[in-house]
Image (cartoon, rainbow, N blue to C red):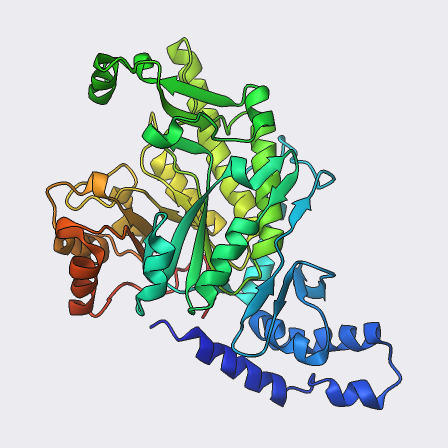
Length: 447
C-alpha cells in the first residue's frame, strides 16, 4: 500500500532529531568551519538514507545533497531546498546552460557494464521513489489531480522545443511550476518529454529545437505521403494533403541522439532528487523517422532505431537513478518489442504506453502480464483507443489482466467516460486497487 508521503517525511524528521548528525550542538561547541561542519553532517547522514538526508541537512544549516557514486556531496545551487516541514520545496525558475557538459560518445556500447554500475550502485544504496496508483494526464490532468483526493498525481507532457530554447540552454520553468502546484496538494508529477507530434499537434511542424531541424534531424510526414491510409484519404479529399501528419525527431541520428542524452542529463541533474517527481517517460516507440527509398535502407534504419531506444533508456536511467523511468512503447516496425522488454529488465526501467485498449493488445501490451512484478508497468487511457468499451472494461483490463502499476486517466467531461461522474465512482467501487508491488528491477523502492 502506498503510504502518505507527509507521514514518511514526518518520520524522517524524527530521525533527524534522533540522529547524532543533529549538528546544531556540534556546530556551536566546536571551532570547525562551516564547510567542515557541513561535510561532517553529510557524512553522518549518509548512513541514514537519501530521503532523510534531503530533509535533515537544512536543519543543520547546510545546502542540498548530490548523490554520486554512492557518496553525498555538496550541491552549490540547484534551485531547490528541501525543508523539514513535510518535505515541501521552493524552486527558482532558471534556465541551465550546459554547453560544456560531456558530449555523448556515440561509440559507447549499449551493453557497457561500467556505464550501468554507477546508477546501479546509487539505486542499491538509496532506492527508487515508488508511488504507484491512479494518475491523470493531458492538459487538464493537473487540475483534476489536485481536486481529487485519491488521485496520486498527474502525467504532463513537455515539448523538447519548449525546454531547450537554444542549443544546450534549458528552461525548466514549466516543469517546476507544475511540480510546485502538485506538491502543494501532496501529489506527484510524471514528466514526459515529447519529440514526436501527431495529427493536430503536428501542424506547427516543430517537434525539436530549431538547430535539430536545421541539421536534418526531423522527419515531416504529410497526409499526401500516405495515400493508402484511411484518415489520409479523408484529409486529401478535403484539400489538406499538404498538411503535416506527424513530426518526428530522428533519434537514431548521432547528433540528435547526443542532444537527447545531454537534455536527459540536465533534467536528471535538476529533478532526480525531487521527492515529488515520480517518473520520467521517454517518447513512444511508434514513428521511427525511417522513411527511406529502399527496403534494405528501412531495415537498417529500424535496427539503428531499436539500438537507439535501448541506449537512450540506459542514459535516462543513469541520469535518474532514484526515479522510475518508463519507455512509452506501443508499436515497433519490423518487431523488436521482445528485445526492448528484455533490455528494460536488464537496465532497470519500465514500460508505459499511450494505448489502454480493453480486449486488444498492442505489440507491447501483450508482453505486460509476463513482466508484472518484474518491471514497472503503466498505460495511458485515451478516448481515441477506447471506442465501444466501458470504463469498467478498461479498469479490469488494466488491473486484472495486465497487472499495471500506474494508470493515467484522461479527465474527460462528457458521456460514459466523464471523469467525475464515471471514472471516480468506478475507482471508488474497486477501492482504487492496483498492483503496488515493488518491481524487481528497480528495488529497493522508497515511499
